[in-house]
Image 1 (cartoon, rainbow, N blue to C red):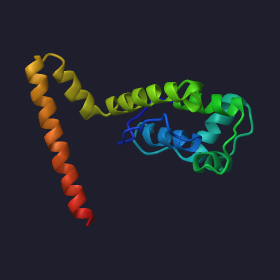
Image 2: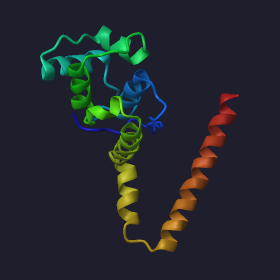
Image 3: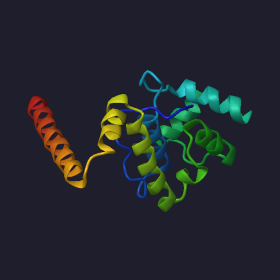
Image 4: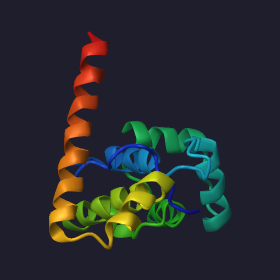
Length: 151
């Protein structure tokens, strides 16, 4: 399945539980229309790729931390579906590195982000700095607006 932008960054994984790591993948990796995959979608794909029993309920238990000791084959099937190395699930250093890559790849799947990045390729360092400053300013303004509407 191709990585699709989920609209959010994948948090640093070094301190995450298995459930948090799986949930981060569900948040970052989306269908081509940017809707999230369901537990049933992922469980079905994992069953098909591994030949192992893999139910939506079992996946829900892994995502919520109610189960935390999957088999190697289950982790391999999840890794295959989400297109990450199996080490993502148990190696803290590798998981942090992969989380950053997944967040970047996920963002680059968004046509608007990709368009801005491609246009920025030919800018001078000063031009890139100006674009970066504008993006940070707009992001701060939008975050302030969201906070004021949540009150």
